[in-house]
Image (cartoon, rainbow, N blue to C red; front, side):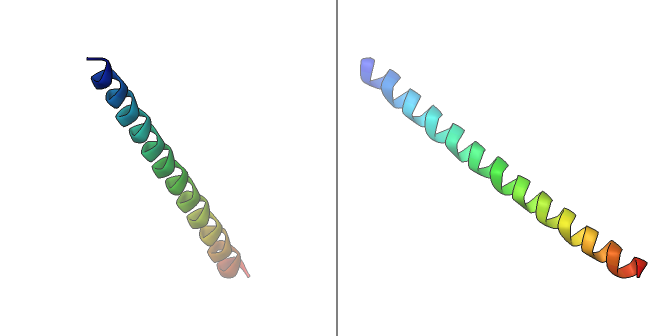
Length: 46
């Protein structure tokens, strides 16, 4: 019984880490697209 709890916690922590990683990558992707949009706008404006 005790072991089951421990493994559950482990799985939960792993899930959390995966979610954090996904959030981080999505954030960087958003920033990258924003930067590219800015560059495009500047190019069209000039």
